[in-house]
Image (cartoon, rainbow, N blue to C red):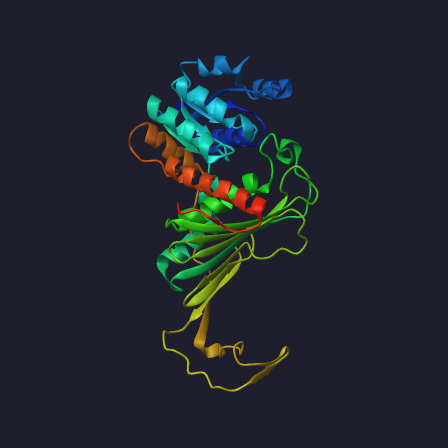
Length: 352
């Protein structure tokens, strides 16, 4: 069975969905048509043999379409998602689903009322680098994690088009931040207890173009999230500290390594001063190399197409959503707290 999808907002992300579906998912989903307020995007749809609907209502009223993707600028998401749900469509919304947790609660009430499937395109749960981190934690190969650092860094400086405008919900917290926050909150599903966030508006004055945040979980895990648009020497994509070792993924190509203790025998440290390039030290004396071993990162398989396969299987009653609305609400609640922390300049309690 191939579901018929209509796309509202045929820009960068809408076009990405269309190309991926056309190339890899035709037996599961077929894009029938699109609506975009820009004439050039309507023409692009026609050039790709799609129906270019004259307005949103025409797309939502098409009885052949049972799924709608909302890929507009962020501030239009709530209105369009609710409209699509009320038209009896199953809905996928690009992230961030809304600009606040309260707006999302309005959507969830309508989704419950209509009984339609509603989810958010948190596609980076399928990123290979993230799946490697989750596999390391799940396997327990280096023990219980207590600190994870997740960074996305570039040097372009410029936030393109509406992503640099406050009214449209631009900025890096909403753009990349929500991805890496969703990842760590799916990695550790315990309650978030406290958050702290610093934001910077260096080159884009209306919104944050760089930020750094600390997320504290009830489990004891702390996560440091960082997004930079003016970084010329990138740090590792992931740095994971566990009780019995460390892991690092340096880049999107998933280069990296694991270093762990060879066994659980506690090393008897001599109480002597060690002289290093930095001077004398006891605490930072290097561990003898024979007590550790270096391992390659685990091999994992991951496919973005599984997102759509899961959504369609859920519509057909064969599976449950992987990206659950209640998980998205938790993420949006923490996003609200990050903005509040940046505003007041101190940490914020969350308990969600």
